[in-house]
Length: 533
Image (tube, rainbow, N blue to C red; front, side, top):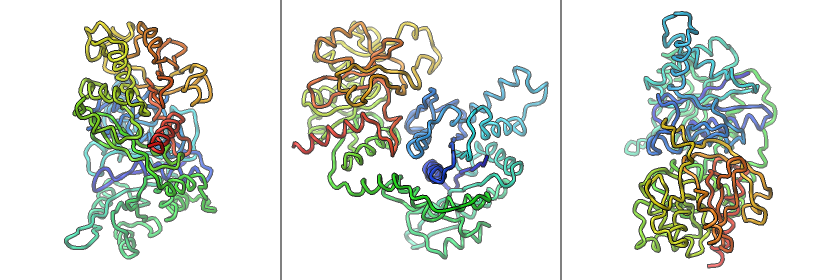
């Protein structure tokens, strides 16, 4: 088993997740089995309680782990299915060590960062609890070299490189800034970053240089010379029109070949990546655009990362460029909704717990329904579409979710009785993949082409079945239901162009080569709407 470590220096947000995903894709294309994992240095057990403004989207694995958004990149690039073992935080590491200490597993020893914390990190890096065997385990370390929180992870890497000679490669991602006033690219920050790693006992094997400007041969040679790295192990990662071009750019510069050479493995022919290149070609060939409103409350691109990427995937396979226009529901009213949504070809009403922006989502849902606009509601977005229908079609003026209005008489969205006694944060949530059975003859059934599906969840409140008959009679059909708990998973309004809402998160399962059928169908309806204008 070979271990690849991806670290970052100089500044954060350089794209370690995209580089890790690209490496995984390139190794897969050569026939190797891989998995990718993210080690985050924050003390939270997981990002589930973090505001998206703090850490972007919270991604959910099939087995119900709330994780960093980079795991979404891992899955979208490689089609692997990550689990809770692919996401590790300092909080999880320390909790595990403390639990072992309380059980007496350490036989009275004094518990220290070295060796006990670093041993636990190494155990997770080696994936000792994973029954699957891989040719490569790619481990991305969050944060930036120099952060005090990252020190135990880097010490664990240093130990693993010493314990597994010839089986590890360290790939260090740094930034080459361009000083406009001087007209120069500067390598000194990279040199200092590598020097700091060397001071920790780690010599990077490969450098990936993030840059907005093309780097010439002289600069690349200078970085290699000053950082003790082979010239063919210094590659540049320029800004590109799409993150999906990064694997091709890395392959063209021989990143995968450099990794194999460092490990003493046969390099062989460069894989063609036909399907991936076809995706890029089809994306580049699309000339027409389709305008989609992203209706939510987080004005941050990473907050809805999986949704936006799923829309772009579906756009490519419908031969359209998807133009996403964010509509902030905190400021959306009956007075300005026409201005905000009238030029759209479709709308996604987004997830997002809490009261802020709720009424704006309800206003958007009413506009989309009454103007027959293709609309996809996801999770909390679905719940607000249900509330809107209850108020304006069923006539329940006080209809709401019990999350927002606990005393309403028409709690069309509510918590199940067995959940109400649980008080621990996250303890009441449905997390991970659950089954859903689709009603034959429904739009949902036609989209999936089968009756039984599995989709991932992240929510606490449910459609209140006490009102199901009233909704069905008034025209909002419950066409997807959990067969075990009889919980409503999908609602739709037949006869409209495309008006579907899901309690689950379909965006978690859309990948570059396997776009999600719901998004494909939604964009197809939006394209037909656009073409009909």
